[in-house]
Amino acid sequence: MKKIEEVLNEEKRRLADMAPPPDFEARMRSALDAKPSIKQKRRNPYVIMAAVGVLCFMLIGYNYNALAFYGKKIFGYEEIMTGTMKDLNDKGMGQIIDKKTTLSDGTELIIDGIMTDPNQLVMYYTLFNPQGLEDSLDYAFIGDEITGFLTNAHSGGSMSKVNDAGTEIKGTMYFDPVSPFSKKLTLHFWQGEEHREGSITFPYDPNKAMQTQIKQSIKETVKVDKGSVTFKTITATPTLTVIEGKMDVDNFNRLHFGFEGVKLMANGQSIDNMGYGVQSTFNGSKFDLRFDGLPEELHSLELVFNEFVGYQKLSEQIPLGNNTHHDLEGKDLWIKSVVPTERGIEITIETDWNLLLDGVSIQSGDKVTPLKTTIGQRLDRNTDKFTSERTMVFDTKSMPEDLLIEGFHYVKNYNHKIEIPVD
Amino acid sequence: MNVVRLVKKAKRGSKDALLELIMAEKDAMYRLALTYMKNEHDAMDVLEEMIVRLYESIGQLKKEEAFYSWSKTILVNLCKTTLRKQKKVVLIDNWLSSKEEEQVESAESNGQQLEIAEMLSILNANQKEAIQLKYLLDLDYQSIADLTNVPVGTVKSRVFQGLRKMKEHFGGEGIEKDRGSVE
Image 1 (cartoon, rainbow over the protein chains, first blue to last red):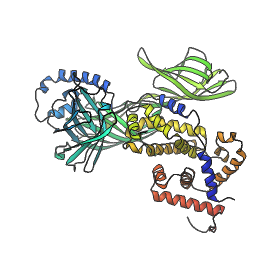
Image 2 (cartoon, one colour):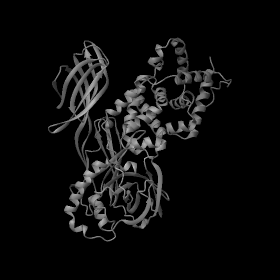
Image 3 (cartoon, each protein chain N blue to C red):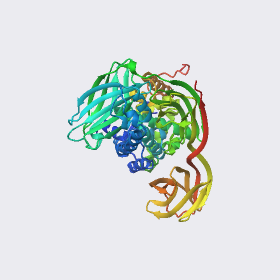
């Protein structure tokens, strides 16, 4: 027998010769394309501006009186503050910073103020350039992280609004919380097209940070079709309410739906959803759901688990024909066309946009061919709902008679409520 | 290629940037997946799942420069989860990739892979993983520790114990067979 090392070495050489299949890139791309584009926490500036426009209209409309009053509040940001942040600012909960630096393209960056609590740091900044600012902030200034003593806070998201002349941007940026032991903080950012690093340091007074209002465990588990979701803790600070938990749900990623169907109700009113994050761990995933700050007078708090990804098992055998409609346990499936191409057999279908078939194959006589890939997903708006049209490709030449489906992933109503006791 | 810049773009939702990052390391990623999954089909399935997972969670990646170690860790975890789900006994026949069978000198390769499969079969799962990553993919101890989420010392000991076990079992380098020893 050969020496162990020799055998291992030979195997290593064999493996080193193995190249990825020629369709590697195509498969990676189609896997990605099958996913709808993710709304990252850093939102599209155009959407923001539209949203800010509406928000600004509403805020000024509703709060005209309040705007006349200001004490120690950070001034000039009313238009891009959400309700809670604005209330806090009106009460003078922020810290005025007023530090300046100049970016590589000559734009002036001013840190006007910050607001901190144990859930996050919110920064208020201004970008000013009399020559006019870049159309896309991505090429001028991107906040990256804030460092300080025991502090390394990463940026979460931002909102900004440009003035009519295009010379000034007022914006807020959201960061992880900073340590109460920091006396000085440094903002690190990227500037210019080359994304060169830059930084600005400013003083911080931890005594002015706002305190946690509620921190308690929830420890409730909701069983879903393909696993379970456990809500562990809730931490409410004046600016933000964070619910953390973990889950082990096999098909969570099959739909782009996430936690949109989970709501937080305070005093019977829904609290604005500020986003959620999911992080894979070895045995499942950790998640955090972020909601706006809670009302000061709190009588009841309830987590409503309305909709979440579900799975419906099927054993359907559907005779194939062009332009036919089928009912899958109450869900619509339209088969638009079945055509042979050089790729194989292509079947174009349409369903609700948040429905994903599982275990699909086609049958021709005794021969069963599993789905190879799905291409060309297109979202459509039909009267009252979104639908998704896509083409399934099967690697066979023989015209199929039937379509076999083992099940589907969909948005299911769970309607589960979790009461969180408040004192 | 500027990894940090591409990661930032991917974080802002650019699929092309993520794809470019993956394509730059496609050989390494493919071989890593192949080491666990044993055949091209399963390896590609896991890689597809990986890129989707990366796309969805890249916002959580704090250090851009750690993109590759982060993504490979996710790949390894996905491989393990998939294997667990399949509860798949890796038969020696399945060890061969479909490609390999088409090769002319397959007879000789078969023999060699039988040999290595047999050698590795006496190890426990952790030792086998460590030996494969170290000797077949030529990774250093630190990278293996990162991928498998254990301290470097543990990796070294797994590799050492694994090698010793194989040598005791199959002879080779003159270590006396000592079946009485407790491991």
